Image (tube, rainbow, N blue to C red):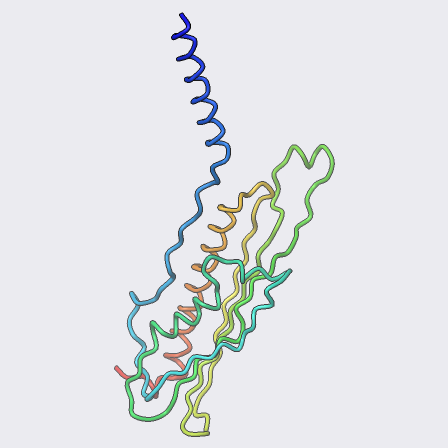
Length: 198
């Protein structure tokens, strides 16, 4: 009989240990893939070099949140230039400038009191904006310049988890970069057709 009690006590302790471990384990963190553009065709320019410049300086503080993103919009914009712009000439310089890559968190009005506790409303909006400029330079002379811009917005509910918020941010970066990619293709093929190499 004492042996059975000992087994019961051991099993009880083991069960308690498992419960404590389950309660203290942190939620699994998100893993995000890089956002690349290598699957798109090269944009070959009649230049001898492509220079990428980051003019945008993230504020790293409220209301901006772009510095918290799993893939920062400014990094995605820089990656676009590295993946798509290809040197195919012997002179001139293409300069790709990231002028803005911001995301601002905007608090939304929600219901207060009992009605507020019974509803799950959208509590924040994220306003994203990316602006880039592409210049063609020959020595100190600017032969051509064009600007492309993309804007996106998304809202999140007040009960959103950190992991889900990060997934929303990642998707926001994917979506705005898809928009920027289309806009850049359009303006480059329209404005820079003399410098395109087929």
